[in-house]
Image 1 (cartoon, rainbow, N blue to C red):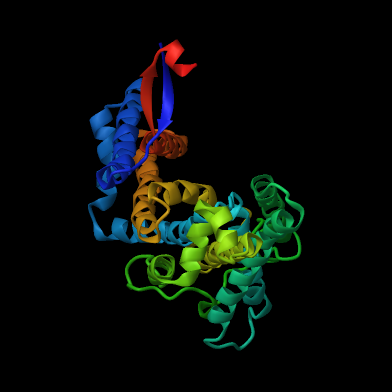
Image 2: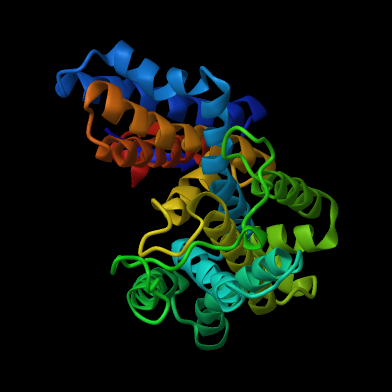
Length: 358
């Protein structure tokens, strides 16, 4: 007798809804065990991690600030993954979007400028992320190179490029030799939605992008093309859809949204270029995309939950002296359980005899 995985003929709607909920529940249970091993009260630690950040208006604004780049990047990754194109390098595309957009902010620093600067920065950020994402897309479409490896390796090229710039030509001459650029002018920063707090217009942009992506995926021919290329490539060819062209399109959109997230992050909470402008949003957004069931609206909700882990991790570090790396452990556990639950969504366990298997 042995266990085998047997593909399900149908997937009930309730099971598709239960899968991410089960993953979250298992993550919380594993987190409680982890806190106990660290010598902390699991109930108190989970409260600090997940409930305290929701207790006041300032924390809710911070939740929106952290969720903004996650929403933008995850929506783009959703399109890629539905087309069976595996963009793993969104972190690098975020960085290059920040670099391209910041060039204009630094070039116009100290000169008379107007309201055109910020929209132009956002456009340059989109173009920067798009150009960086099209490198692995073109290599895959033209040469058949694995896009997972190329997009991932380009992350390190982008990060080292940013590091070179802020330690070199773009370093603030009055910054006491710290590796950072000058602070952006007010015209080059995201407008705040409230006077008290850091919530800015980027959150509204992210929500609008998620809604538009949901309409495109569910109500347009392009959305149908993306789904068909990912689910049935042969049928897509018979329907006249070019998989290479679709790959280029979804990578361009995904990279553009990651680049937009990068320049919004720099022009919003950060306010200047630094060697590190992201705590790993590009990689965390992969978890967001899968937790959101590769659906733009699901990604919006999942991004808020993952943003909660960033804020909760900072709170736990201060209140209970729990290492900040626990945040990454939580996110890793969540990805593990999401993929594990999805496996049992697609397959069922079946006990068969050796003779039956033969």
